[in-house]
Length: 270
Image (cartoon, rainbow, N blue to C red; front, side, top):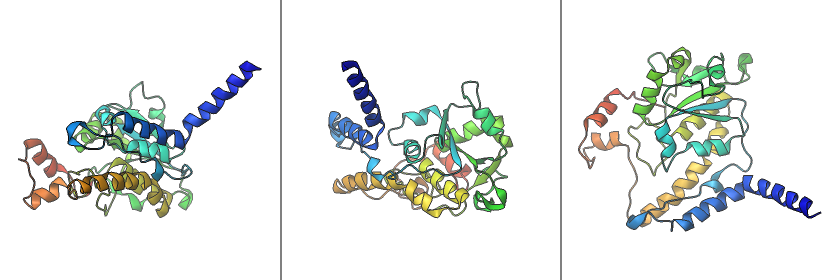
């Protein structure tokens, strides 16, 4: 009898740990443990964006496949976790490395060989994403949307180190809006976070504009919380490095790497 009670308690604990409330409380406890500050700079260390997640996980027909640079996984403010928690299990796959596919990337080779797999990357032969048939139109099947997650130099390095990506249909977003990731400075006006890129692209492929809004919920919540704290402590709205340089208000010397990056970036990058 006692053993059965213990098993039931363990099962209930398992369901509890997988719940959204558990994630929220975990974020809160981490914030309390870290005193919610970063040394003497008085900046938030952890901000829980879980309240911004959809009430029910989204289940689009297509799925997102993220090829993530190892350095990106170590960043504090990354948006890929927002994608994985907003979408149903199996709708956002993550493979880490600098070259793809490798033997450790189980199942990736099959995905890259699928005729419905597309790569969001502004290569010279990339076509506008909105020229593709949405799922269900002209018998179009669900897409595998491949995204490169990292800084622009990291994404470019992944692409050139992975010949398998050359054979994918390359697509690009046209008319990219200004990034809504207002607490982070983007290199150029056309750059978006991985979450924004995935949400915008997936909504186009699914033919569902509301999908983007639902997926960006966690980002909007995070930015409201952090932005409020920043403004209360004297911060100002973030502009891209490109914008500040053109306005001659960029506060730092422009290094060779940044200058080269601004020269090679296309007008609209994903």
